[in-house]
Amino acid sequence: MDNLTLAYVLIAVGVILMIVELFVPTGGICFILASVFAISGVALTFFYGDTWTGMITLVAVFIIGPIAISALFYLWPEALWGNRLIHRPEDDVTVAAMPGNASLEQLKGRIGRVVSGLRPSGIVEFDGKRIDCMSEGMMIDANRMVRCIDVRAGRVLVREIDQPNLADLENTNFG
Image 1 (cartoon, helix red, strand yellow):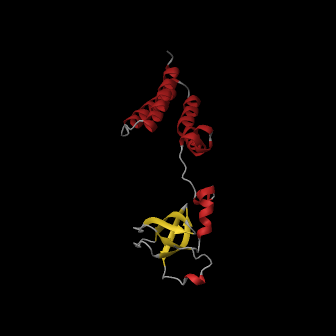
Image 2 (image 1 turned 180 degrees about the vertical axis):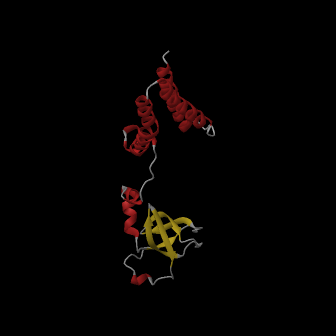
Image 3 (image 1 turned 90 degrees about the horizontal axis):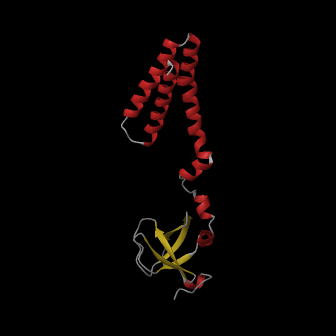
């Protein structure tokens, strides 16, 4: 084997060990070995090749290589396989746009009756429909009146109110 070929093989082994370090938790052992192999390969190109071969190899390994790898990590989430492998959290907007959650948006400002005690979550009846709700952190006993103050990511947030005069409400079906 030619000495320059050996140098490039050492650099390739260093790159492979660097990739292994990304996926296998070795505690930095593969990183150290990769650095030793890469530096040895570059040194061999200076020793057995001419100065230009050594300089081109040095620039390729320690300047162009890291720039290319950082660009790869930047573009990886946008690639086909990156989209499949990297989990992205759902936005509240997309959760709220789901058909089941869109109907919950209509509950804002509505008054309901607690069916099961909210500790801090439980069942509240709005217009004859039972909805899983959460209080603002306070426990609310059953048969108390609550008002829907917000719907966030499919969760209905309620606040306890005083007993309203049922004749003043447009929906008086509270049982």
